[in-house]
Image 1 (cartoon, rainbow, N blue to C red):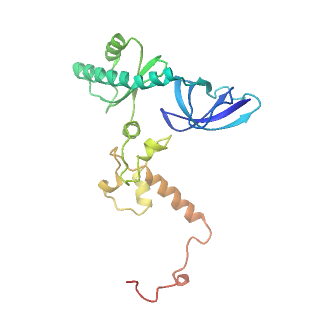
Image 2: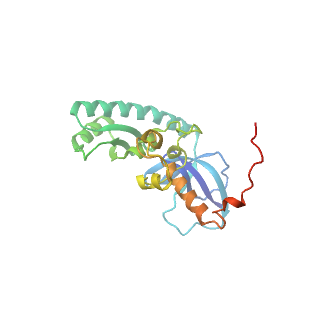
Image 3: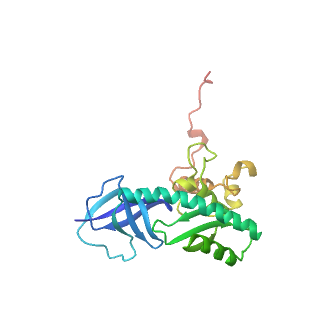
Length: 236
């Protein structure tokens, strides 16, 4: 019996739906999945049985359960990412490139290494790629990202102190936030209060805007003051 599994990838905080020809997976199991990026390790969140493979040919497919060796290589991957990070920073400094390295990601099967960086303009990093390919002996991919994506990769505690920042925990798409959004919510234009850890306007302003629009569309949202029951006396 085949299954449609919902899994979580390290590269994507949101759930990913994939197909498995094996129905022996349980919640919490680690598995190997073939994606467009290559072979990746995922954690099973849920599953439901199906009789046949889905018609969607682009749906990722589960290769097999992760073995102890797979999990060992997965942990060693973090050590390789740290080595690649230090190497890249050294070469950036040597070539005096105006860019900031944010993160490094080794694809599990070793087919490529992805370097994420930020910069104020386009960077000619062709010579840097040659240096990295010569040292790491694998395919090199450079990705220029914005400040919001950098905060998502690095993670950290949100300013609301609820836990990890929303961008790292569950946001899959980084919607832009404009000053018009803050003004429509009647918020004081205080940059220190409206800016997140990325230095841009907080993503949660979009949540507030969506909630305000939902409340305004509800019947009886605007209630007359005379319908409110006043307190007879102050509560001490």
